[in-house]
Image 1: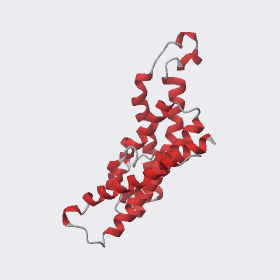
Image 2 (image 1 turned 180 degrees about the horizontal axis):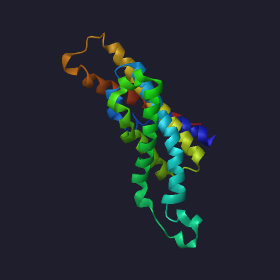
Image 3 (image 1 turned 180 degrees about the vertical axis):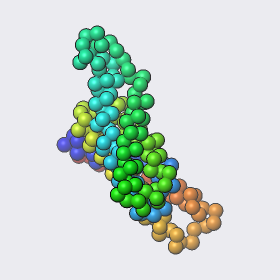
Image 4 (image 1 turned 45 degrees about the horizontal axis):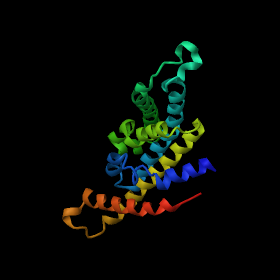
Length: 204
């Protein structure tokens, strides 16, 4: 039940886009059509599901103060927490490279449409933010971290697919010239964020 609660909260309440505004660069740039947005959303979700458990294990058994005690008493006082940010980014960058190669091989059209934003998953604030939130909240296990990653990824996927669907529709609308493009997208994103605030009352 605790994992289910975490999963639901990370999708609707602690949504990376609408609650923390993380990953906005690719959210705004790649949300012009649903197909491309869905592809990037799947890639981000996969990255979160894979990297969060790895970063959890890395944090628990290597980086935390006293985490190296399993090597012996001489290492019990070692504190490598200052390396946390660098190590998290290294893991994310490595996995991004694998995802990029897989997408290029199995879906060249998606690879071409995502362009520079696929390798930029490595510096997507939502992915790094999840790892830092995982560290801050001290999630209980690698499985819990995976659940949190899956929920956060699905939440980001819903956000980018939702805004992409709306942007496809408003192409046929009479939007004022001053608001066309990124202007109306910001307004819609704000309204979607307000709508997601209605989920704050969810209790499981």
